[in-house]
Image (cartoon, rainbow, N blue to C red; front, side):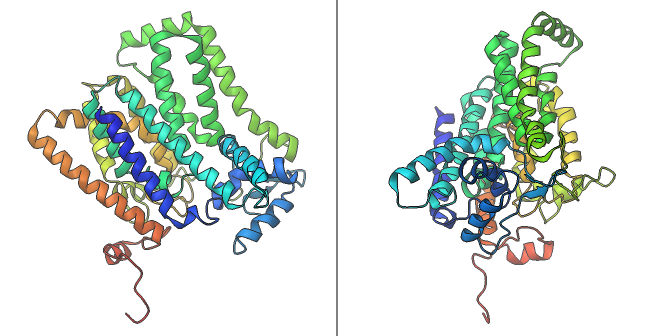
Length: 435
């Protein structure tokens, strides 16, 4: 099947990029955000310094002396130290962490300190696995609404022409590939639950929703997927209300499961920091009166449609959802503006050192529907299909090239201007002094 071939091609390109860059051989996986997520595991299972973090910080400084070993720790009301970042990613790191820990202890060549190369490679590999599994789940979802050829092209567009590739091949331990998987699972589980109303799907729906919020609290907005999916008419709303009332016990269980998972974070805060809620981002706020939506979409700094232009086709494809995959339309119409508004109201709307708009990657499984709808329309006309194929090839080349430039530091991680963008566009290396 063509969609399987697309998936295998994406996996091959991702793994090829992963194994050739220096992070695979060094200690550049557990840094910045990843170090903050990961410290839940090392502090609890290796150093027993939860609430303090001193031992973990000392070890981190051995590997990256130029970085603050206590990065990601913030003061709690009771004087202890708590992790800045939510604990959700630690749950997903756990299989890789425990496997690496057992392997390191059995082999005996390195200290089982949580930060040697084996641990870092394990986090990278498990991150790639989650992201690729998300692409496979998305394939299964799309095949329910589109044929195999359309699905294959949509997968190629998402996998190789967006910043999904960057955060699968170059920074796989970040949260974005995992959230991509969870969002694909959310759509799949929503569709299957409404088709069958089986208890298992209700439980998984609550599990997925809870884990998403535990990884990134703003993912709570994805509750709009099960809430609005398929509500394309007044009759559909009436039937949905009746079905949910009939299966209200399943709905209640899904909500309870999600709430139980989310409650782990305030329980941790209370146990370690002495308060049920702790502002773990002190001094970092949303400014809802001054969102940077246009900057976020079109600026050279991190403009989503500048660095990931293929997604402009997905936005156009929303107009075609009335004819195909209509079930996604009631979700996208309120969710997309909500996500853009909240995302670009954050004080650092560029989100630190990153490529394109990394917070939007979790939205790609949903945006795959309008993208596939546009592809399906193009396939009905040879001219449109040839035009789309050309655009896809150009977007893939641009994405792979600029991802490589970002990785090499040619594209500035934080503050690119139009002047810098134009000057550096054809650079393959930094010029040598005097050249």
